[in-house]
Amino acid sequence: MINKIIEKGFFKGLQEKIGKGKAKEAHDLYLTVLEESKSWVTDKPTELNLIFTSTVLASYRVLKKYHYENWEEIIRYCLIERTKNKQQFFLKLYLFFDRKPFKRIVKISKLKQIKHYGDHHFTHHIEKDTAKSYHLHVKKCFYFDFFRSNNAIEVMPIFCSMDDIWGDILHPKKHGVTFSRPKLLSKGDSYCFFKFDQIDE
Image (cartoon, rainbow, N blue to C red; front, side, top):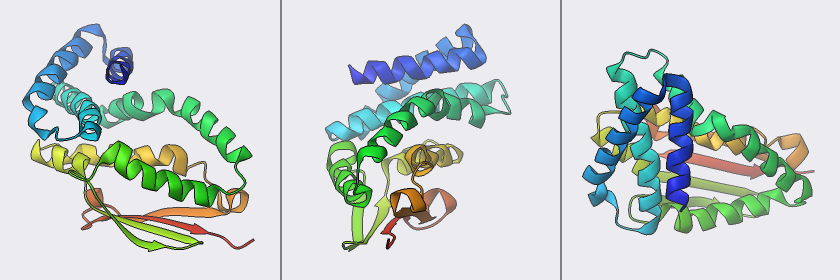
């Protein structure tokens, strides 16, 4: 069910930007990419992640085919901007009522490592886990490997920016937590570094 919701929403946004005909061409290509890439699916989390990457890869190829210079802006809209305000509204509401956001963030991160990413196509190395610091290294990333294998690595920074949906509303003075990513695979680093630290009141 959620697969269809993701697929429908993404291509609805794409149609807004490039028209019904080209959006349908991208959707048809998406189905082909999905079929050709099914060997990537080794667990439940990857099945969902493949939906995301295949919609983007198919759209990227069609946008490049028709020489859309603003291809990145269009994909960013379909993947992020179209629903960003709604997502941030609920996140802000959540943070408003949560008196200990740092502990909650750590708990969610650990849960997502299993539920949303799995341990086959992602590796999560917890480098520091204390009452005030949580540092995580991701040395293997399904998104990065998928786009690199499909000669579309320039798409990867868009996926990295999905973390900004919630990262942008996390304010140190208001929530007592700092968040940064000093290293990213998409920037040529050997791993992604997610750094959360609690600020002393």
